[in-house]
Length: 101
Image 1 (cartoon, one colour):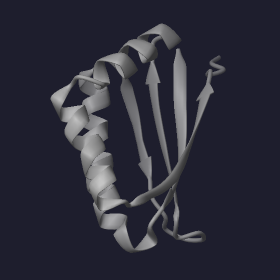
Image 2 (cartoon, one colour):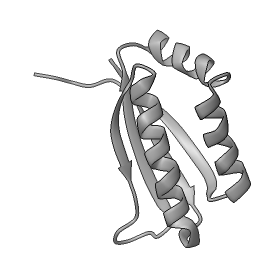
Image 3 (spheres, rainbow, N blue to C red):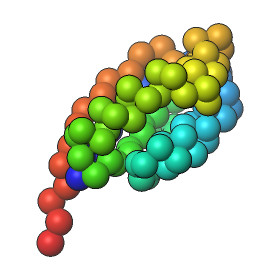
Image 4 (cartoon, rainbow, N blue to C red):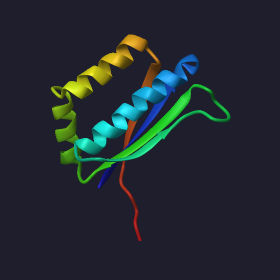
């Protein structure tokens, strides 16, 4: 299993728009073979940092998802929403592997 960890710097005045965007991606990732673990929005502390975690069975499954997202209509419209509203300032992507007992 491979887990993608995303750290976002977001516009703190557009948290509701980012939350809507987040909910769209949760459904998309689950539909496309991944397991979404949720988005984590600011509550206390920094008001402009959010996180996201989702997993795929393997790196090749994640890469397939990324390739398919380029032509998937729902993905395209969700990417367009982020570009139009500009609530994401920047993001960092890290891949993690779980340690399970």
